[in-house]
Image 1 (cartoon, one colour):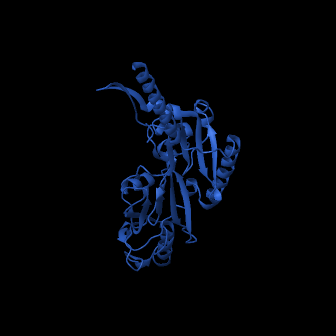
Image 2: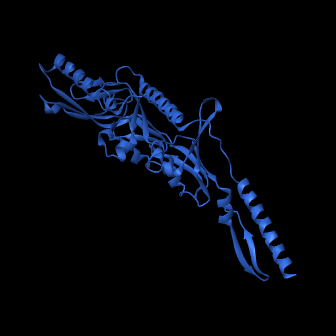
Image 3: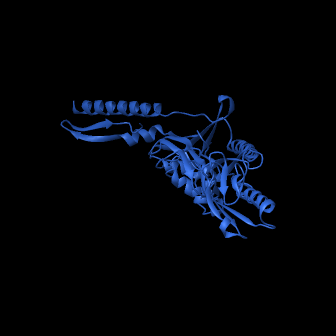
Length: 345
């Protein structure tokens, strides 16, 4: 009788084991690879090269933005300027541009400076002085307050909006005025500025990551009134499957597969280390899937495969590993028993 009970208990235990094994196996999502790693990387490099070329055609570099021509500010109503006439200090003045775009200067009266740069205003005042009072005048115009045109900051900043620009500001100053970057901020800033000669809007791109992370203060360029700044949000990737903290993570420049897995807390003990899938959506709603081996990724292949926006890193779940991670024995009223709780969420 005792032997029969023992056999029956073993039989029940075996059934539970098989059921748990099948259950664990059913919990794993399977992505079938569609291309090789080599072809995947070749496509990535070609796509990246085309995107870089497109951006360079559409946006100018920060070096162009910092050129003297790009920094010319054109006067408008409300701006405060200081005018110095070196030959006669009594003609010096500190005046604000009127709503009509004029300034009133000693002995000269109203002078129209609307849409003139400081250099152009200097030349105009010198010409008037030469015609009326002085043989060879020398004039300096300094813009003390840039009020006529506000700076607009939108995108991934804490306090987007428009801000008065009383004087020249640098990029970091303007970002501070907007409350700083949000955690979701991307790694570039796009700046739109009106060309001082043609009046057309010109777009520029500044590498924020190189400025902040690498300390390249040459990129901390001057921002003028009328400039518009857009800080895009960083892309996101999805890390799921047999990782400790599945979720959505920001894609920063140079984020690799191994780093994405590390952000998600690393692999669980029921991960299939040779069945890591990287899923990338391409044109026409299609997707490319490659299979990676975790041991080969570390310090090698994984450090050359970079994550893009909307990529999925999925670590396949081992059925046996999931089962043994969730199974165990317990002592109860009737003695030793078997319990199972799937660790796969």
